[in-house]
Length: 366
Image (cartoon, rainbow, N blue to C red):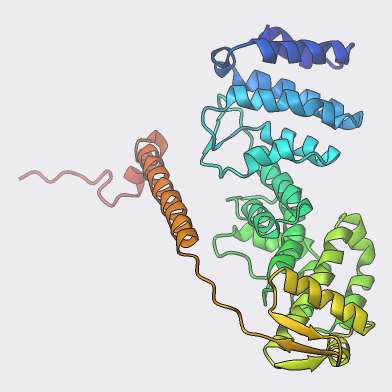
């Protein structure tokens, strides 16, 4: 039946898509994992067609359960990536239903299902790209930055549009999550990608680091307004708004390094906020979020900055230490397995022999 359903997807168009969708749904619910493990690429290609059709018809939510069940059938271990993970993440983004995607995104990838040699690196890039967008939507910006960075640093001899768009969002979520003074990419980023970013990403992204770390709020707003049309075309205005909030919070944090006490009026002037009420609102939010330690004396309109209170929870720290140790032990085990697989690879052995100084050396007779 899998082969028959796959054959239907190869037709120029599917005459009765709803019937086809029902047949696929019934097959996925009744088949066993062993049946589809022999031809994983067939089921994946069926899912591609369904995802694209539902995207065009604005019915993304309908497709999420079927793609989710297909992943459960095909994956052999929790950390294995399939090409249809990107389909699931795309549908979740379109309908803003993130829970199904997060059940996979929260698990680090340790393996890729080759799907009988049909896996395309495009699906890896899209999985990380859509994953980064989902984490940005739920304001887990550190995780989002990590996902976008994974897109940018995938080894490449050519640069795709996915990488360029990932870099644009990487800049913004990185600034939102923590202020960084330069826009240098990780050293292991492909030179091809670095050159493409320099030529294809304009000043609206590459110069934003400098404005964020060295400019005033007025300069930041002028810069953003100057490039607003480009941000709108990139669909990044929402992230830009949050970057502005991060800029203000960063400016307030810098004042804690200079002053022990400061008036609300002086703080508002230094950060270039419109009123003391706006300054107070930002301070309260930052205190509640643990970004700064301060108290506000409303009677005289003064802000007193405090040092970070030292809190040590032995049980909590021990639990975190144990979790981190287990993660590193698992990572070491996975690296050893990868090293073993590489050492047994026919291609690797051939290249090693060719690069060896002893390869094809004439034997010396004694």
